[in-house]
Each structure stands twice: as C-alpha cells, then as structure tokens.
Image 1 (cartoon, rainbow, N blue to C red):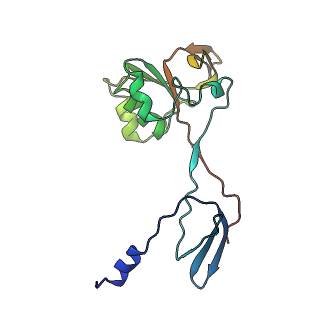
Image 2: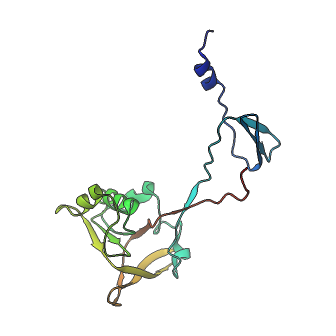
Length: 190
C-alpha cells in the first residue's frame, strides 16, 4: 500500500485508556510521557485535557440537592420537568442558552442573575428579550439557601443585592450555570 508521509502519521495514532501521568520529559524533539500503568509514549505534541468541574454557589442546602432529581445540571434530564417552573442560576452564555433550551419543556424559566446585566452573547440576550420568550430574568439576586424535604427541592431563598429585600421562589427544578473551574495539574510540566 502506497501511503503519503502525512497519511502515514495519521495511521499511527493510538488511543489509550485514561491513566495518571507520572512523568513528562523532552527528548530530541519528542515529548516522552510515562504513565502509572508502566507504559511509555512519545509524541511531537501533547494535548493536556484535564477537564473541569461546575462552580458551586456554596450556600446552605446546596449539598443536599446536587445530583438529585430535583436539582440537576444536565440537559438530558430537562425533559423530566415538562410544563413546570424551572430556575437557572447564572447570567452568562451557558445559563442563558440553558434557560432558552428549557423553555422547550417548561411553562416558565426564571434566570437568577447575580449582577445587573446578562453577560451572555447579544444573540442569546436578544432571544431572551423577545416578547414570546418564556424566560423571566431577575437581576441583582444573591442566592442564600436551598430548602427541601426527602431530597426534593421546595424553595430557594434569596435577597436583592441592591435593596437587601429578601424573597423566595418555589421551583420544581434548579440548574446552576455560574461557570467552571479547570481541573488542576498536580505536577510541574517540563
């Protein structure tokens, strides 16, 4: 088989199971990777994809509902909440896009935004501001706590950060989209 040199390089790609990297070294134009399973890889380039985790509000009651059916972060579960009131905490792209998507399944979606403006793209903001949008936005909201019983979310307590006025909302579900934290690399890379 006659294969061009660039095509040959594409054919030698290997996929490996996730392993802890014990050591990285540079040797003659190649990067050497030593993994915890005792294997050794070398390549001209290494892509470090260490992942990320969702940021948390760190307020009372949040831990009681993370991962529960009434307090989820994943879109695939959104269909469970059809024709109900859903809360999305956040005001950036992810929160706005999630809120817009959830209107497919919910009667009403309320965005709880910490500041006095949305920080999403103008396209997302325009869609939220359309007269037919079923997304309500509450600005200057500081979430104080989550309350519920038997792993079911009953209410979210919050206050207006501009006026100090306290309030509560009783949603069927809440999604938190306030950003992500990159996973940390524990060892120095040469």
